[in-house]
Length: 225
Image (cartoon, rainbow, N blue to C red; front, side):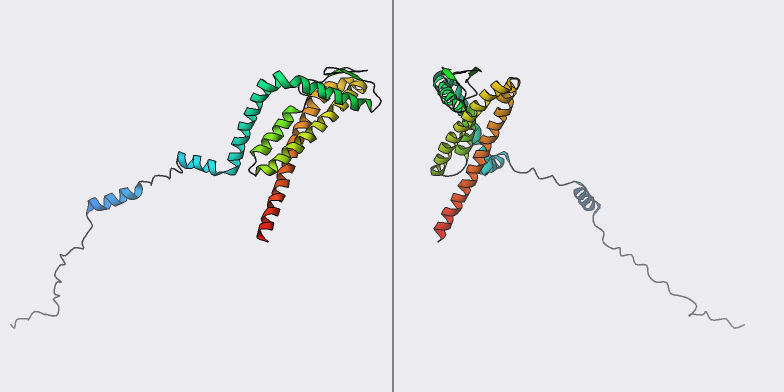
């Protein structure tokens, strides 16, 4: 019998196994990167205390507010140590004399005894009826405002004059309230007029600040011309 030759085509040659492996990153390095990515970055701590203080100092509103508070403290030191001991008596007596003269213009026959206004109704012009605290409030606002003193001086003088005139109007209206509506006297004296005076003092300060701003704008415009 003839031997069959093996079919060479039927046999497939085995491909040699590729023993080469792709290079892999070391495990330790990949784990360190994963841990580094997992750890959150520390949040920004913000400005330091020194930066915050310098920011407050450079803030014009903060400087104005701090100076205003300091001036109010000095005012009340003056009020307690000097005004109450030496000036309160003469000023309240002067207010009573002028107030009595104005009341008499309306046909009320009044006279004064020190700080007392006497007539159909007796009224004592004492502390709180002298306009000193509203004047102090408006003056401290004007002095603390950042502008040149040459514009502060007329603001102070006009403000003192305006608030003294308003105080005389208060004395006249309070006396008339005591004559015609005595039950309303305490309300008008302690609540209504006190509130009105504070509002008027602040309102005057705001009007002066606006006037100062216009003057400053005019001065800058004149320099540019």
